[in-house]
Length: 110
Image (tube, rainbow, N blue to C red; front, side):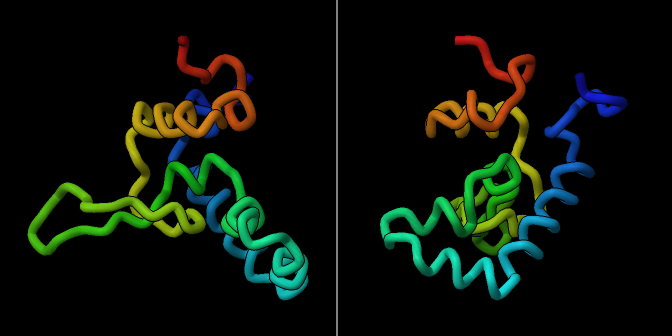
């Protein structure tokens, strides 16, 4: 169950708290030292890591005066705006992360 949070992990308040915690964790020197031991092609699994917050809160590159991002950068849940839930679900499914990161009742049906 979601224990009082109808949106569960997709509640923006919760996701922003998770993102803040993840950024603090990645800033610990021991974490950086440990991640530096991971082979280069696997670095992104350690930093920024695999989480719903990384997918839901990308940095959005915007052109001046535009409301549509020109690019999304999934670099560690640094974004100021959460993507729409349908977009998050789609991205998680594209990367085969849906079963790993979402509870069964949140997964999009096939």
